[in-house]
Image (cartoon, rainbow, N blue to C red):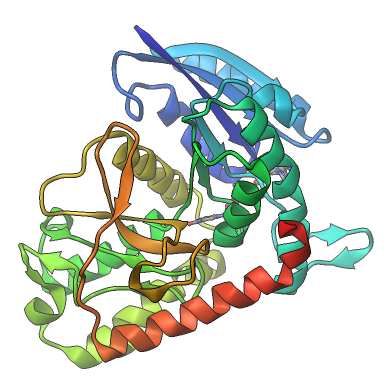
Length: 332
Ligand SMILES: NC(=O)c1ccc[n+]([C@@H]2O[C@H](COP(=O)([O-])OP(=O)(O)OC[C@H]3O[C@@H](n4cnc5c(N)ncnc54)[C@H](O)[C@@H]3O)[C@@H](O)[C@H]2O)c1
């Protein structure tokens, strides 16, 4: 059996609880890959991971390799082929006597975490490692982590697959088709309510979803805000943020990168812009992507964007530029 080292931060969190068994079950990395899992937590929580590891052992998957818990990011990411950066400080938590409510405070606190993690990954993870950022604000955390890693041969991305899955589910329900009929979904921009889950270039059985649904008012005024604000709707209904669906999206993203993309299709994740579609270089931006399955992921070019799409992409670009500005000192 092949072996792979996978590091996960936030190992004792909600998303991790749904994610970890699926990483070591053969589902994510294949039936013939043994997964050595390194769970990374903050020192106050790391002991809890002993219980998580007991449960993972008790799942009894033959693909389970070594299991380790650590509060030392350097130990956790050494020789990792995949690093899943799930851990972060949620909004609403009290840090040094102050309740963290503002996006700018959240950006700074989490940005601080990602500087040290980026440095450790750049030095110690495999040179061809894939790093997926899930912890919010995911795009800007990825920008900080990648900058600090100072290792251009590693591949960083941040997650928009949950938004893409939410968008596909809504289009499929409206068109009364199976969700597998909905392809070519792009979530342009930030993983935030400014995202643009592109209904014009998404396809239902090969035809533009907007054409199939034939109801512009629904697309622009119902579908779009529903997908953009779905995260908050789940929090309001469940009293906690999306966890099972977020874990599922992590697995979708890993599989999309590790396997060749189906002919004619693409998938969604945020990667550093190379200037495509006039997005400022370096910003972590949700794009349509294709993978060779052998380590290279490229941005799909020449997708037509109408004025509606361009106006939405402008808003999400501006938000990402202002997030970047708020953490500029962490990028130096
Ligand atoms: N990109 C997306 O689509 C998406 C979707 C859902 C949730 N999220 C984000 O994912 C993150 C995790 O969500 P959750 O529900 O699992 O949260 P959670 O609060 O249940 O768990 C987060 C865990 O991270 C740990 N942690 C904090 N700082 C850490 C550090 N420096 N190193 C290692 N671990 C650390 C915490 O101790 C905690 O156990 C949140 O930021 C959430 O907003 C992103």
